[in-house]
Length: 314
Length: 310
Image (cartoon, rainbow over all chains, first blue to last red; front, top):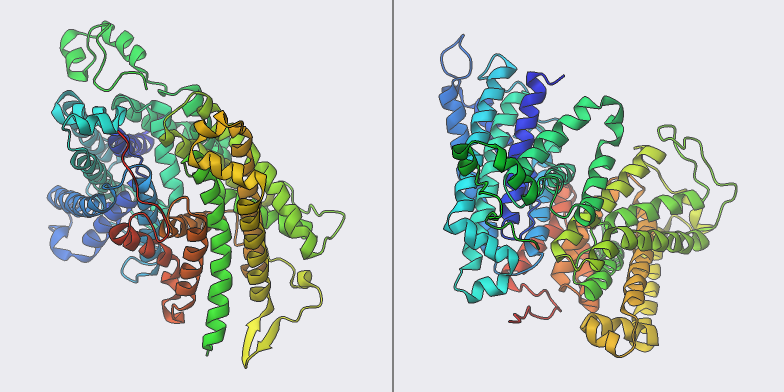
């Protein structure tokens, strides 16, 4: 059954799914989510094991204020880096962001494998624990997920989200309508990096150890599968995909070896068979009709017939 | 101590193989305008097939443990045969990852996703069937050639010379074919404008399949050559080459055939110049070039600038 440890992994998966989803809202595929996740994780591992001032009073657990500080620093670092890369590659249309993000993940992997401070291939061990029980992490990750979902919901319902949806549907038409396409794309990429970095901090403490393998190209595939499976038309899709696809291999232990083949099949066949993922706008509308009005409004599920921002067919 | 000539030959031979490999991306990119992310996996498959055709046995960890072909081919026959088989697999990738989306006129972004999926499946099938261990191609593959040759006072591994010669030969044949034959010209016409090409009586779908077959052949050959020179370190070894070749591709200019070759040689030479104490960072060189070219000359060395059509 689902225990607290699996629940934490599922929640972290949902957060990473949202990180892949954000650039897709304006039609950009970023495979850098594991890279920023690794930056957050490495930063947390380094700070919490090497800076005595963060460790708090002896005998008590790792203080939550230090965890928050790490998350803040990781968010800042990832945002600055993503802004720089975005400024460089988002002048160009098409697939340049995808290629540059692949390169970033590889550079980070090579560097962290070769630096002494990050422990090389072995990684960093004995990362202090702010929570004694997995349930503490589950609650913390859930709070973070709700916060990010709320942010995504506000984004989709307001001007930035509408601009991003317009860019996704037709970049040139959006530019001709006076939408600053480069700026919005960069914002989406920066937000994606920020979410991944903060998730990495929580993951590093939860896993108790960090090594460069956690941010490799396989992780790019896994997180991409979350979004393709769940659908990228609303933020509910990647959350559902992240939760379901993280739980699936754990619940079906026998297919352990086949995990990546299953994910490969999802992203090979998904776009042709289920172009909108499992969570489609009609499904959301059907669910929305059964929910109480305030909750429906909060989730952005308008009454039947009214489509969601960015929910028009491709 | 390496002499300048040694570094030059090592760099050029590695670079020529990068060029071959990046050319496979270029061919598909020029007809479809998308990148085939399964290319690295096809490269890996080429290396494994060359190993098997040379009479190598499967190790103990895969489902096919102990499998060995009943015959042993010489390298000169095994390499092209492996290339032909990978061309077939590349056609299969086209049929599963590209054709269904092309029928639906889906957005180009989705091709990236589906071809990544095809690559992941290929690599993991290799891992399950053949195991995760590394393989070395037999040193007897090159027949009576000595391990090293003395050229102008430098000791050069003869494998490197074979790499350079084979790559040069394939590049020569490919460019003659592209420039001089009906098929090559038709391919160029489709890459210029698929709709006009179809109006002129060129079967665009057939040309797309042709591009995938040739690209798969090039990837298979490149895989076999790298396998011969460096050994196969496991089913994932092609992924890092595949990603590195993306850097080569952008450096040369997306869609430019001479650009891919030139950029391959540049990256190969730059890697050969990395001193031994920094060798851990050698794999990052292609990406450093990538970011530099995006900053300074986004269309690549020999590419055409991006135009905005309204």
